Length: 144
Image (cartoon, rainbow, N blue to C red; front, top):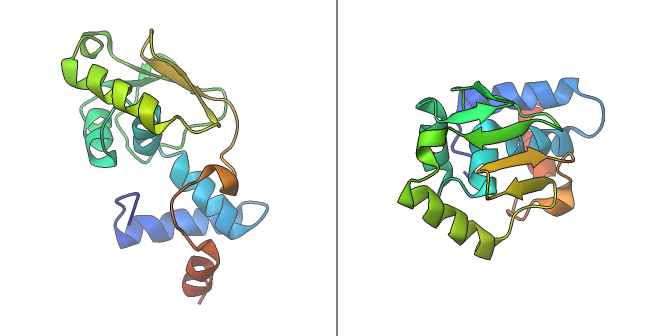
């Protein structure tokens, strides 16, 4: 699965999506996309979601200037995600950013590669998410 979640964690996210207003499937995708580890990956600071998770766990990621080391943290619209100063000169991080430019940054994110920071400028929509995911089947399975 694309987000690297354990079953228990995925079910917890699904239940949160059910409590939100709107369509459960779209809420689920929005919550998954806005996980801090996924946002770090989507911004191009990491070459994979696993590497992004490790960066977050190691305290290398700041949200609005505060260290957050919880990969499942849900980033909100307007929050700024950045890397600690010491990582900005890391060759691997710079290479990751270069690769991300080729891959493209999702339209709901804004990247400032000069400052190694990014911002969520809108909630992700179904059209913004390029992974093959049939949320209706997931909703059907977990609603039982």
